[in-house]
Length: 214
Ligand code: ATP
Ligand code: MG
Image 1: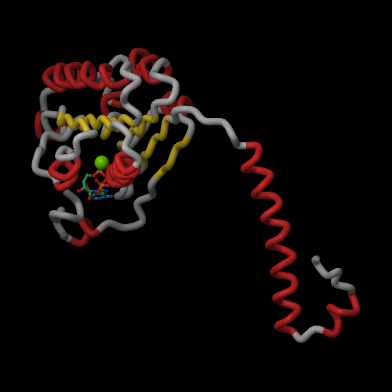
Image 2: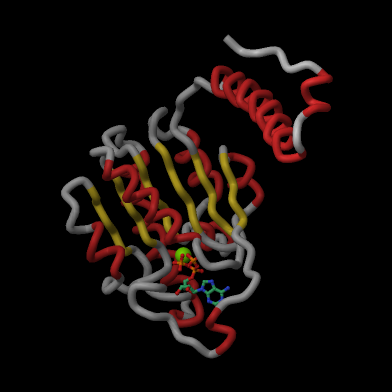
């Protein structure tokens, strides 16, 4: 049985006891609010998450979700656009998992390829593979790594991409990463995280290192 605390009892408390008492009161209130919010938020559906911004941590955050999903025995598809390297730690690790399908679909950074037409052709081929995943309900989670550039550079038809995302299987989660996400993609997303670049080791002349950046 909970004891009723009177004003007089509070006055007689030491400072420390009073602090503990008010903390308990605040936490009881907070728990009631959180429990009520959890009861209200009982819907489940496939979510679209956009991780954008100039700071480091977009792709690695998405790969953290790949680990989570695989840990639950779910099936995951990863499409890596733009980048062409196939020697990353994430690919070596996740591609070896039976429930993970991994595609490196880029030709390299735009400033390396310097060929808009070729970039567009590569993007469309990559998008065809992504579309297969986005229309296949057996994929619980699909990662579209660096997809944002294909929209901001107009390499893919915006409407086609947004429609495919909207029409995907109901319970399928999708994570899109990359800088400069266009407004329409942000609007469509359920969750948008903007990773801020406060500082980056690269600015002090430190190159990308294995296990940390790739
Ligand atoms: P990560 O894959 O490390 O999570 P990211 O996905 O947030 O990075 P990208 O734009 O895809 O960022 O970056 C690719 C590479 O550029 C990574 O090696 C990353 O460390 C590096 N990088 C990320 N942010 C910055 C930055 N603000 N300045 C310089 N280099 C960066
Ligand atoms: Mg990235």
